Amino acid sequence: MGQVADEVIQHLTSLNNAKIRITLEIDADIPEGIPEDVARTVLENCKTLKFEQQTLDSETLES
Image (cartoon, rainbow, N blue to C red):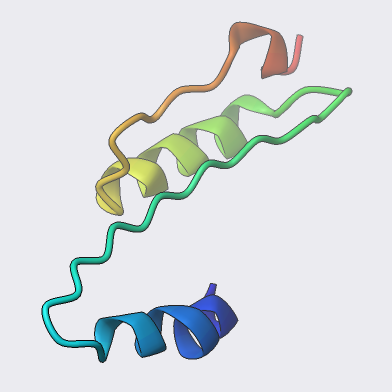
């Protein structure tokens, strides 16, 4: 993300009257599932970072 900010976003935001909207989608495929403690940490961090959506599919969680 830092490289994207340095090489793309910085140039766009330097333009007069530029209105930049940045979106980020994270899609992870974890066949073994995510341990409960890791899932909780990820969701808490997403909330702290003010992600609009903070969800994990139930099938992603470790059984």
